[in-house]
Image (tube, rainbow, N blue to C red; front, side, top):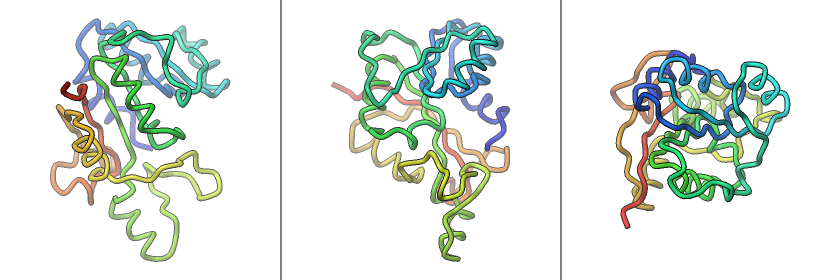
Length: 197
């Protein structure tokens, strides 16, 4: 997986001091804990794994068990300054619905996705193998990923659905990638705002 320091550089830089944050699929809460410490955010997480939730609660984090594929009906429109979907969108059954709900309850949405078009992943496919990379560390039989997308696929989706990409950050081998990200970046991070009405 990508080093948390790279994610911190990408994500924490976009989040305002003291903002309200909802992290969808927050895992063990490392990013939430960092944002609370570094940016003094008011943070809440949603996670499906009971083990991950226990780890979060042991750290004093506010995390609830919920399947985000069912929606976020308990939250009102614009309830949070930021909603985070980091390494989550490709794992949900209904990514379009999850993103729509995130954009509804958040004034801005941060999405982090593994890039299935990363050159090492492409090379694996060329050799006839399912890709296994730092950002895609699972074998075919135990992967949580249900959807396979590239950075260009996600950009096209946003364009076609009138979702504004305000900022991007691409990374590979724990460093920023500035050229040819769809080929050279393992992961991409996107700061989104709502579709224009």
